[in-house]
Length: 473
Image (cartoon, rainbow, N blue to C red; front, side, top):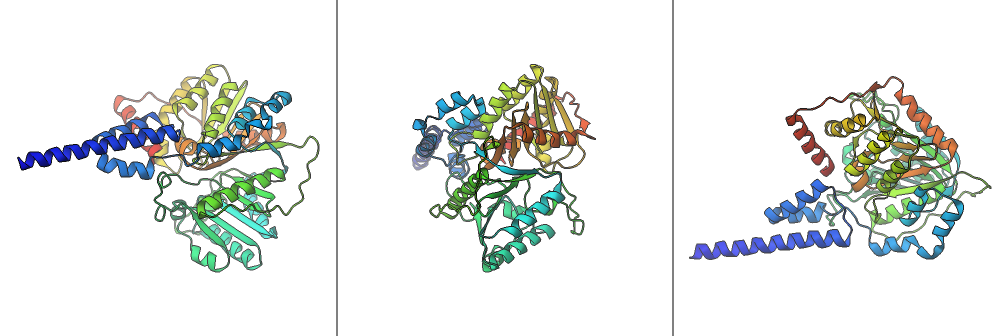
């Protein structure tokens, strides 16, 4: 009888935990608008129903993918500012209408855009920016390599801090270990304000442990920006042949600019810094005069991630693919899109558009390489063309017609589009769009055309499992 009583109590406790776990899942998903990949949603529901004792703590740590609150996002939209009427008057594209609706910063003028041809030019530009700063230097990166380049950059940052420049370095809390664990204490002792973006060892706040800051940004004096896809490690620039395990250079894309758009990147950094440190946001002043000439080119800052109520980049990509008229040209190190983005790309190919995707033949993440084949087969069967470059390509860019180039830190995979903090720039003037298109087209020279073969049942099942794992990780 005692055993039956204990069993009944255990069953009751289990039932209460199942109810509590599912209630937390439903309420959290509803109030925070937690749109999830179907496989992730099914996995959480099944786990919470069968093993809530283990699944509920994991869900509280990893399950939430948004930290933005509805009232904050609605406040940023400013519905009474007449933006919709201005959109109609100016005849701006659907992208700008969507960006306005999602509360993104307005398109702003910029000057002195330079698209770096290769890693050597990108490194020269970065060194020059760090050395010429007179007041402030702010750097946001996923990782800093404990290699020849990482050490050079950190030494230069310490030197500038000793010279009186305010230097802030924001490194992702997981990425710092992937880069080889630089010594933050030494940087701080030299006057550099160095912080981790949500370290999983220190921050167990719900939903933040699995959300990584993948943004790459350097801002000097509040008005000169250097950004793109490069982390601050040797392989992202010119490689390191002297390393114990030689690091060949990767092909990556970065660029620099000045002006009002650069001031917006400074504001973006200030927000991320305040979030990472838990301090009140203080806006960094611009120390450069911003001259806006009539007819200046403009571009738009597109921040995507848990701090945005909407999945901003995903929305803009899908909408742009549906509205494309002539071509879609993209480059990414990984290609594991969600079903909606994949459908938008395949339908564009079926409509007769030129859909060209450049990927590395073999990336630095084998899991992503295995997971990409189902999507690649579907895209090529629809008439799209996939090009496999012989070297590791880490660049991230999408060009639509002659009207839009989305360039920055986001990969074409579900982690970048739904989980990571990412930063892209949307260029829509003819000259920069053509410049980024030429940069991508150069990668197709010497690239191999992808030919997908029909897999057997076992391989197809394994690919599905890997796609699910790739999104979770």
